[in-house]
Length: 373
Image (cartoon, rainbow, N blue to C red; front, side):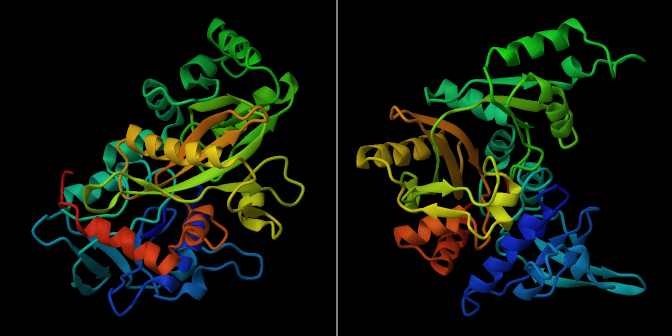
């Protein structure tokens, strides 16, 4: 499953194309299901080429849709099926689905909503369960759980809708006591800060704010994607990422060789442009940090995975400061799978290329019980 209703629709499509090309067709019968931005489910062509950037245009499910391809999921644990519906034609079943690979990012795909639907339908699926998906999506509660486990997180302020935009005819311009408190709390973080949607990804809606003058505008940009906003203190140093897989046969989680993000182009930070559209963005695998720091990054990545009760796979992001400190930034419970994404790159560098990586993820999912985990 790919696409989805969130602002990360195109990223999901790009990842699906990369995965479709890597799946072993001697082992798996693949049913590509795209979710359009308006929420329709579509039986998509099994063609990775349609899920690539073409002529500077990002792919979409809408561009692949055709009459008579809409899908309906049966919420019947006994059948675990998909049905194709078309106006004027009787519904036709695609047969029982053994496992769902939800390559979806952001709201309505990575946040526990789809996971809950799949559990209601009695379907096995790859990746984190309902709780871990929801906690991993909401950066406030993610950081609260990390801190409760004693993991090193940076300083931040949560901007809630009720504090920023209270009801009333003058709410657009009113500086209420609540709003002033939020602004004062943010000022104590120091400058610059990073302003981002609390439940977003791929750096969409994220702004680096160097001084107070641009703060309110940046919050409004983030609020276009989520009424709850996170403002984070900047952490000096380099960005480090680490990929995690659920352990085999009930064993502990396993971490890949980490990577340093080398931001390309003119981007000030690792934003959407740098992640997916800049040819000179790269990964240094392993990162240029001491061996004991690499070992600690891998340990902390597994600890973060366990703190949220993650399953299947995740990517964990850190900062490594000039004085050798490691700061945990966030976890991504369904990391990007594009050809430019760090997750498959790190596992390939660890000795697990994409076809074998996908096989392990699918086999892990097949070992789950259907329904409530």
